[in-house]
Image 1 (tube, helix red, strand yellow):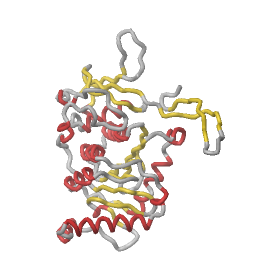
Image 2 (cartoon, rainbow, N blue to C red; image 1 turned 60 degrees about the horizontal axis):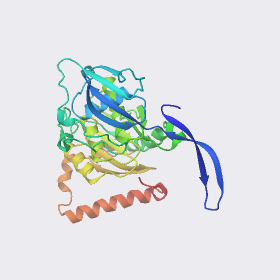
Image 3 (cartoon, rainbow, N blue to C red; image 1 turned 60 degrees about the vertical axis):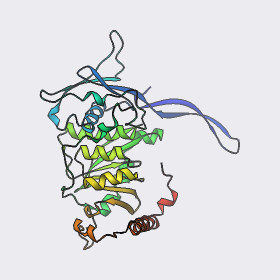
Image 4 (cartoon, helix red, strand yellow; image 1 turned 45 degrees about the vertical axis):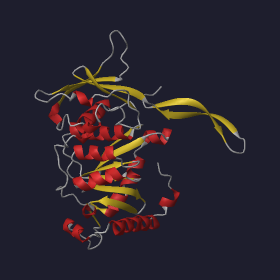
Length: 321
C-alpha cells in the first residue's frame, strides 16, 4: 500500500441497477504524533508525507517558532522494540527557543477536518503573531490571480487519483509562480505543510506571497496565514464571517469564490489591480466613504457577490463544500 493512496476493491452502482466491481484509490489517513523534545504536543490525522513541513508549520501557527533557525532537528521515532511506522515525529528546537506552552497540548486526537478540536485552551489560537501584514505593499494582477485555482488543480496529482484531498499552495504575488503545493486529507494540515516549507526555505515572513486553498477560508486558515506573515489568502469557496472579521482587523486581503473570471474580495481589495487597464490600487483611506449604515453595507455586499456570480457561470455548476 502506498503511504499516500491505498488501492481498494469497490462496487459502483447506478440508479438503473447496473453494478460494477472495480479497483479504486482512497486517500490514506493516518495519525501523526508531534513531539517536542520527546514530549507529546499534538496528534493529528493526516495524509503521510512532508511530515517535517507539517510539524514546522504547526509550530509556526502556534507561535512557537518563526524563522528557519528555530527548528534544530526532526526525526521519526518508534516505540521501544516496535517497528518504525513513521507516525511519530520528535522535533528539537534551537537553543533559546522556548518550548510550547503546556496549554497548547491537545486533549485528544484531532480529526482531519478540524485543527481546533480538542484544544486544551481555545484562547491559545489568539497567540499574537510576530509578523504584521497590514503594511505589506503586495499588489496582484486580477487576471493573474484568476489563474491560480487552475494551476493549483493541475498540480493535485493525488487528488486526481482519489478525489479525497484538500490542497494548499503558495504563489509569488508578483510573478504568479506557484512556489509549493501540498495535499492532505485535512485542509489545516495542507496549509501547515506549505507554511512549514516556507519556514524551512527561509521565506518567513511571507511578504509578497499569496496562500491559495482548494476549499473554504475558515478562521483557522486565516489565522495561520497571519502567523506566517502572508498578506493574502485566496479560496475557491466562501470564507466564514469570523475569518472575514479577522482578515479585516489584521489588514489581510481575503478572497473567496475565486473561480472563472471573477472573485469576491472581503477585505483589502486595494491589493488586487487590473494591470491591463488604468486601474490603480484604491486608497485605504477611501474606506471612510463607505456606507455608514449597516443595512446599506449589507446590501452593497450582497450586490457585489451577486454580480460576481453573474460574471462567472461556473458558480452555477459548482458544489460548495
